[in-house]
Image 1 (cartoon, rainbow, N blue to C red):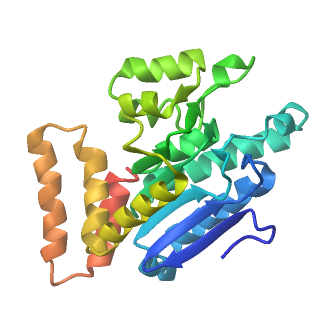
Image 2: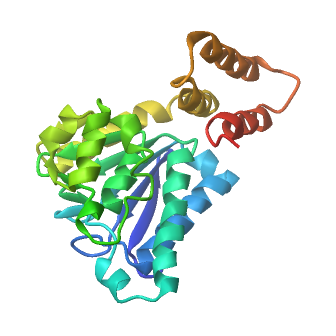
Length: 266
């Protein structure tokens, strides 16, 4: 599946949903790509048929140069308030949906991951990259901008030290793959894009063979348990275990309530 302009693709292989950005050499997020990615994630998240077919999501780039170089800043500089609102509101929607989707997600990053490109990878559960990957949140460099779209929310939860998040957000400096790995942002670095994709698919295949009900309960539980004491965390674990063992009620209904409570926190 792809949108009409072929700027984003969804391919489903053996219960793995592979999303590919294909919007030119830099995969800049203009109006079309923002809407296409938003709609695709919304469809995956809300369509029961898609949920049955997709147990793991991989996100990668068709370009050899960039995962994504970020938002189309030229468009925002010359744009009306409506366009700026589109970038802010709709961009936030797909970051929220990606962060809170119960399905496990893997970002495969090569080349530039700037701004929203970096933030998309932070919204995923796992992040692999190539040796040439470069990461940057440059908002502080531009007058009148602020790091949004989960920059101040997702990044501090991932890095090893809060000072790493402060450094990236307060300097706008670009870091390489090795530095990102030391900060805890990247899980593994690969020499070539092909090696990275193969490793990402291997991880996805491993997870796709597991019970999706249990997988989604684990993701939801982790989202809340990581911030709790052991007694509170074990109570949530028990709650999830009871859903799995329940024979009187629809487990998917119970699972969705659990996800809403602990992953979406609604």
